[in-house]
Length: 221
Image (cartoon, rainbow, N blue to C red; front, side, top):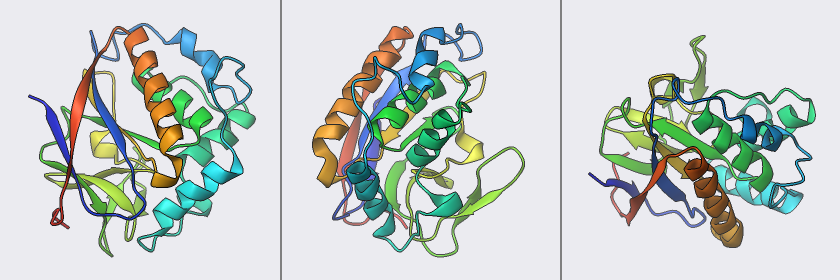
């Protein structure tokens, strides 16, 4: 059944999304050795590079609801740039490696949700004050107030900073929802990033499924 993602009104947000259906579990897929070169900051084959204008536009997007995208709460794409520069960006699994490669070089944050761990309906909206979730296996939490998030039936589960631990991929993952956090100021870059991302996913033997992005004036809080 096609996935629908309802998007609450926002003056800056221009998201891109698709579903990936892998031919085997991520634990059964061979290591994405071909992607390893794209986890390096200076990968010559990457079709684009991040820059200060993209960094500023992404921060403006996340700042609109009152969130402060700085320090430990900076966009995930900025974390990837730093990690790659330090040689600390390593392969994790095929789905995450493709996501990280595209996010690193496009400058756009990307979320990946395991669809077998999440429950529909899905929507994007600014999280209310006081919202939070655990984002890693150690039990650390992130304050989500004012930050654009993906919500499933149980609450927020992903955003452009840190995705929720409860819906992250693992060795058993077969189907994922990817959200590229684009902005209206970066529409051409969003299109380029989505095109390359889909290409990398198909190289893994996965099928790409369309997501219906549905505008709504009354997405749940």
